[in-house]
Image 1 (cartoon, rainbow, N blue to C red):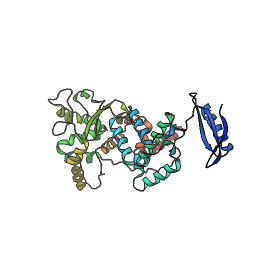
Image 2 (cartoon, one colour; image 1 turned 30 degrees about the vertical axis):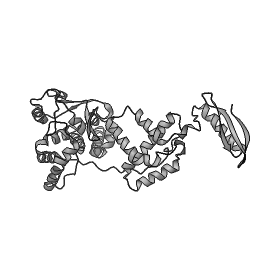
Image 3 (cartoon, rainbow, N blue to C red; image 1 turned 90 degrees about the horizontal axis):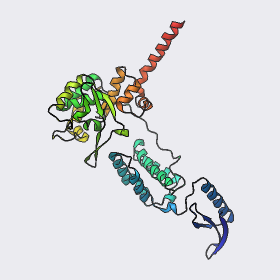
Amino acid sequence: MATIDSYETKTLGKLWRVRYRTPEGKQTMERGFKTKRDATLWMNNLEVAKSKGEFVSSTAGRVTFGDMSERWLDSRIDLKPSTLSNYRHCLDKHVLPQWGNRQLSSISKPQVEAWVKLLSQDLSPTSVRLPFNTLGAVLKYAIAENRLSKNACDGVKVPKIVHRRHGYLSHEQVDALAEHCEDYGDVVLFLAYTGLRWGEMAALKVQSLNMLKRRIDVSEAVAEVGGRVVWGTPKNHEPRSVPFPPFLAELLAARCERKGREDLVFTAPDGGVLRGNNFRKRVFNDAIKAMRAADPSAAIVTPHDLRHTAASLAISAGANVKAIQRMLGHKDAAMTLNTYADLFEDDLDQVADALDVARRKQM
């Protein structure tokens, strides 16, 4: 049981202290209370925290945020190399300059709110989220490590993200873009009609294609991390089987001609991995300009946006939400609905019409 007693100091006079044992049985104390009432309040809170298993010693939070962030990064063996690289960059650029030398226990909610406001002056709402979430993740890890009792990010408001409408291309516009990409037109057609992510497409090997069943085994992905190509698993680490339409079979067969099972289907001019940044600079950006010069109504898209085009074309063809989810590799159908809610607006009219027809049949 904790006890309270007083002691004398030369400069401040009489002060109070709480003697107590940690959950591990170590005898320690907390000093510097100006009144017995303050000491009693602290002691009562201490006993409540110990009973709930939420006790944090007064010295535990003295570790710096910088040290804790390194421990947090080292613990994230569940993350893909590209994601770790993004966290590393975010910490170095935005988070550590503000919090790196601060003791964990000194970081308060008002200070975090002021920091978010400062970030919002120069960054978009989306760009503010990553450093804020990174700060919160490290503090959450510190709580799990029994270094903190609460997270200073909890309850902090961040700027609301206004989602832009995805850019979608029609069948005709996809064909035009593919034509302007010349030798890499099949890459555009493949992405626009399968919905694969760039890294998944670039990692495809000949053995990943089942030409008879027209299925793609998506089990690997490549990413560029610090200028290096890193191999890993698809997003969410979930392999999936994706169908491709018959007209792609001939194009894929041509890509696989005279290649071994372990060879890449799509390659760079030198035969290596087809890198997204190089593709955009050398091929895609000029192709977009040429396409829109002939058709100004065409959306300005990126290679990743061809994934959205795939969803749009599939929905227009009558595919249901569950099928779209499986094709794109979304975690659940709710994510698909949230991402492409604008594409399902026509379905609402169909529901209303179907209800009207059903009612008339019963009347």
